Length: 258
Image 1 (cartoon, rainbow, N blue to C red):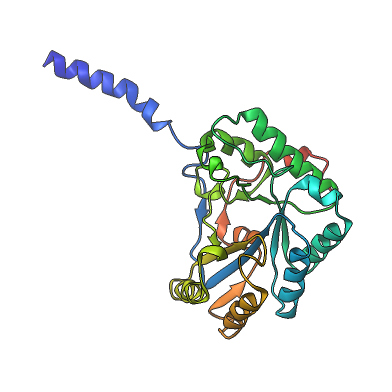
Image 2: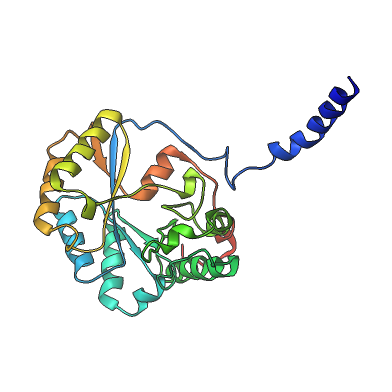
């Protein structure tokens, strides 16, 4: 009996420790049910003329795009800067892609995360962009070994959301790459999104991964559906309308341009 009471006492004492051991935003982020299918297109790196051609193509269909760009690259290309401004004006979105396309790995530290994520946010906002999200930079898979639990508290200081810079659902969203899917697969994914009322994010770096003709086929396919069952939106639209997320802690005191 004494042994049992001793065990019970120990269990009661250590229980609060387990209860407080959580991931950075566990139990905070919630996503409401979608009323229909939503599709978001994100194009990485700001490659030219790909970014310009994507913008022109989607403008024909009156659909927005999202562009994830390394902050230092925008200053080096005035044409890219102009296109990104047009992307925002058309209802699209510019997202951070780190400061200089740095892919983190297992050796990356909090200082590394701060440099890339903070500087990217501040640089792009000073250029007049409304930055709410960040897209992970990749490098042959080494980024998958980074410490995302250590990274997420840094991410949430500057951003509302990410595709991979964290361990919670607020900062971890699966993206579907065109390079791994043929047209029939993409159509099937869209059909499933309509059936299940889901949000799907499609991504590419260039027309080497999906031809402009195939992209047009996909947009025609979406356009053939009813607006009551599917819509193309930017990333922030989802979080503004369906996400109950933790607001960034640092931007309020930043020098960002409103």
